[in-house]
Amino acid sequence: MPVIYFYAISSNTIKSILIWCLQSTDGIFLKMSSGEDFDFSYESLSSVANNLLNRTKHCPKIGIICGSGLGSLAESIENADIITYQSIPNFPVSTVEGHAGKLIFGTINDVAVMCMQGRFHYYEGYPLTKCCMPIRVMKLIGCQYLIATNAAGGLNEKYNVGDIVIVKDHINLMGFAGNNPLQGPNDTRFGPRFIPMNNAYDKTLREHAMVIGRELGVEQHIHEGVYTCLGGPNYETVAELRMLKILGVDCVGMSTVHEVITAKHCDMKVFAFSIITNKCITEYDSQDEPEHEEVVEVGKKCQRILAELVRRLIIRIDNE
Ligand code: HPA
Image (tube, rainbow, N blue to C red; front, side):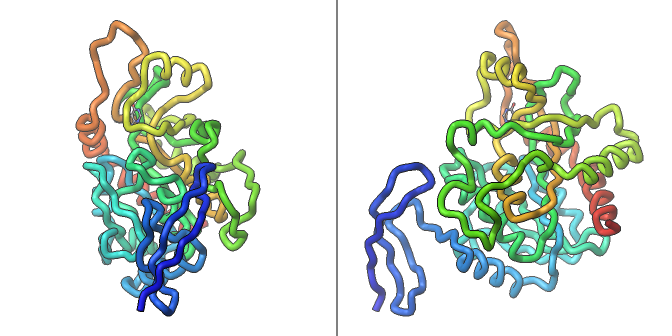
């Protein structure tokens, strides 16, 4: 006979809320009353990781996240075991067009990887902890590296549509506003309470990527830059973009920063790059406007070169 429990819990904002929780008599979590119907505990995420490991023959050491329009990067994965997000107990589903909602386990050049084809964004209504829970699942599965990709608006005037930006640093604007995926009680089995972020984007991996860019003959189109994530889903105003430029931001998106924080918390090595899908509009008299379709289209056009960059980076990681 299932039992209903009433709890007062703290959400990832400061408010406390009363919720009900339906559990079976042996304690198995069935359903909660509010949107907070996820259990992010170490035990729960370990059971997600075990569920996935039971459904694949691979033991990945590298986790990859495909950004908007970059999903076919996952198609270069061989011997693939494909698992839809819907079929994973206690896993969110991706609601954005251009984000497929599949986990792909397989190999790239004989190196075992797992790839998120579709990520979770804050603007979908998910708290940052929920957006980032797959990163912790990656770590529990055995991934030591995270490769995060995203589509971004180019704020640096030197950047053109189609260019690749190796992220060397970020500005966590949402964190400045008090929203961080690590907020709330800290479980030291994931990582320590306070973590440094000054070496968040692994220097060796960045150097490898620049060398690969030269090997591929795209050195004119590859840069190192500072990324920032805004909550979205709207694109930015001219005044906002001018402010970001003064702050030292080179490219702007709606993801990655909180994923990287979560990965660093659980001691993963991180590499991230942005594909510039549109130029940020910083003039009031411009009639141009950013569009999601354009973002996805440009992402798709650049996929082959990006897949090759990732493939060569993985070979180098494997030789480390
Ligand atoms: N702004 C924010 N996010 C984005 C952009 C942008 O211009 N382009 C792609 N993602």
